[in-house]
Image 1 (cartoon, rainbow, N blue to C red):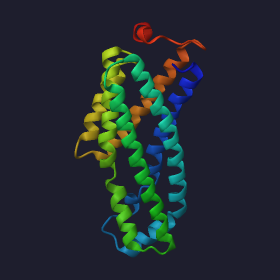
Image 2: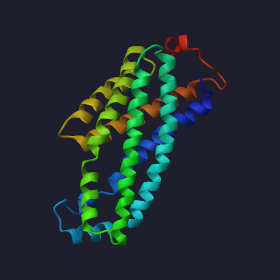
Image 3: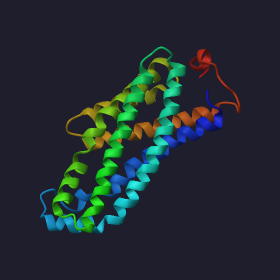
Image 4: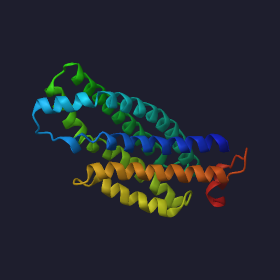
Length: 221
């Protein structure tokens, strides 16, 4: 089991990563300035103006992905400790891995967007625009799987505050609803950020250097 300091840092890594994953796409709201049916010249001009923003956004999300992987490893370890012999940790690991893979694909398209300023043309801009606009569907399933497994563990073991688990089920319904893919992806990420905060608070309450045995973890909390 990790020490208090490492547990707090790993939990906060998840909070920071979710903040970046939500903030960067929200700031790069291309749909706020144009539409998918706009002329290619207009889309090319829009992407050219956003060239530096795409670069910095990709770099910020790359760092956030590093932090998320750190957080994911911590979360899986905690689930293995509080729910030994269950499948929750496996589901979270797979869901988190697929989420990370989706982020990498999104980063690839974000970097492809920078080529428009170098003369790639409006066709590339339209393709990247379409992919970015609909990419929330890609995030929905892995985020929902991660949130569902963790919420079930929270509700069954009371390892973390139970209201967090019930809120997770609501976030999953929103994530998987056909009409709310963008809102659903954000809802799932906001829930993960709340989970990170709860994990950090739990780690702070743990005495320095204390290593709580798995069998006593849920009972004492």
